Image (cartoon, rainbow, N blue to C red; front, top):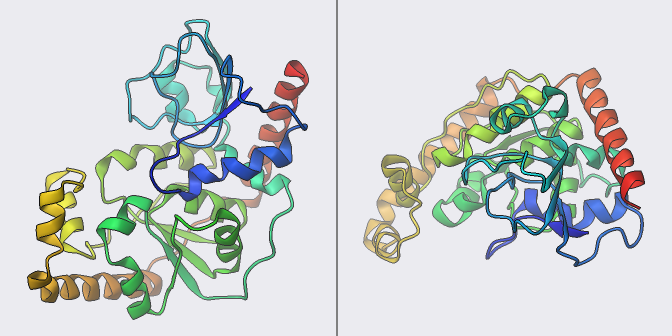
Length: 295
């Protein structure tokens, strides 16, 4: 069975959780490179582009709207459980299959100790790292900057140590919630990343209250204004040119001031201890059944 998850040009925290979580939860040799059976793990990776010849086993994944919804009733899908009720509804699944994002299973393994106790931290979406000036904004605001491209074990340690995590990255919130670090959700800059947040939040009983933050750079402003990705060579070169540095600096200062205001005025969120324990237990039970059926 082949472990399947998204991996782009740069690593991304949520996706890279797959690389170490499953080897700690599954029996030795359970995963291999045989594409006949695909183990579809953490991420918004229920796509319509998987090979028809492969059996697709969905283990806590979600539908994010990045492709058309696949026909999971075509005989090539085995849905063990999905991230949340919106995914189940979109795919026409039994609502009982909507449990939680599989990253909640971090609660079932040994994890690195927290970093030295820290204050508030901020994690942008990995696309915002390239577009924005968030590391500088965090320095200005006195907030620990968490780069979602960093080693996931380091990030887990830092999240556990944070007093509160402000995060544009959904898996920052999922991991924080699982490990009982209060979080404040930031509305993603690009609209395509927003649907999945509600899917996860509903699975753990959270009435999500996202906050908007202003762009930290001209390129982020362009993405917010146009809805485009801001990855074109021309737009990137122009919007990052030296002549516009005073404008960039002004936007970064405003973003930093907004972070300070959010931490001062907004109440962090956290699912209840009962809800997170319940979904963790259900995920463990579903995974154990799946393993016993496919050994």
